[in-house]
Image 1: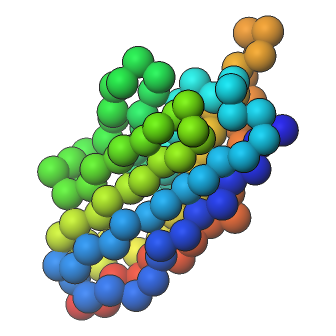
Image 2: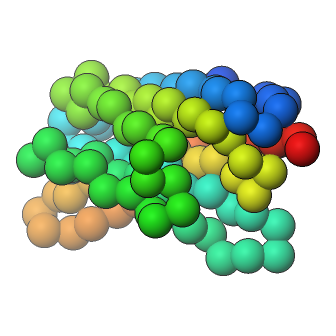
Image 3: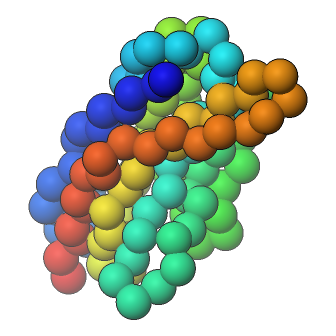
Amino acid sequence: QVQLVESGGGLVQAGGSLRLSCVASGNIFSIIAMSWYRLIPHKQREAVATSTIGGRANYTDSVKGRFTISRDIAKGTSYLQMNNLKPEDTAVYYCNAEIVQSGVRTDYWGQGTQVTVSS
């Protein structure tokens, strides 16, 4: 079992910045990747940024150049630095950890943290 706790959300004006934090506990030794997703009202859940054990970082097109993911998977921590925020970034942001045991992949999710960007 893995437990994830997010923090750092809030209200910010367009052009501002926020830093989201995620701390995992439990069976962190099986984590192969940590990611940030967001759920925008009336839209599909979207993968924002992913960081793997291999050190690769992937971003959805809309946040490239503005968001940066950093992590220490061995410690089960992940951060999402969000700069030049736009109103369309408003969403609930969720931390995700991918666990692989015996070749079986399992996803764990945090409770989410609200990010609201005003014009």
